[in-house]
Image 1 (cartoon, rainbow, N blue to C red):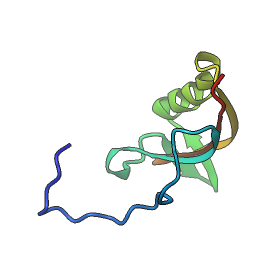
Image 2 (tube, rainbow, N blue to C red):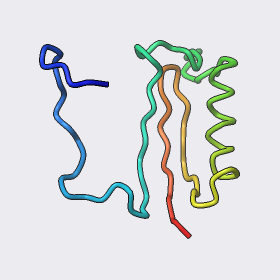
Image 3 (cartoon, rainbow, N blue to C red):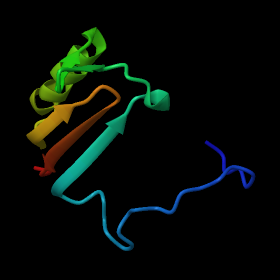
Image 4 (cartoon, rainbow, N blue to C red):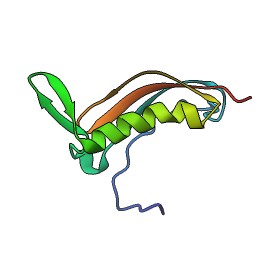
Length: 91
């Protein structure tokens, strides 16, 4: 994506000088396009995953199987986003 000076820009929350390619523990938030509730709904205080939400759940778990450098920790799929903790250790 090219830089467009007419579009508003958010301040980066990245730590200056930190090597994000290094081994470490990372907290991820993955948002659905437009924050649309593609992954499910909240019913009675509980998230009920849609078919797309179930795929997101399965693919998160599959990440550790297909990527040997990855270990997964806690995660949650919400209606419009996913939070997860991932540990990356390069061999």
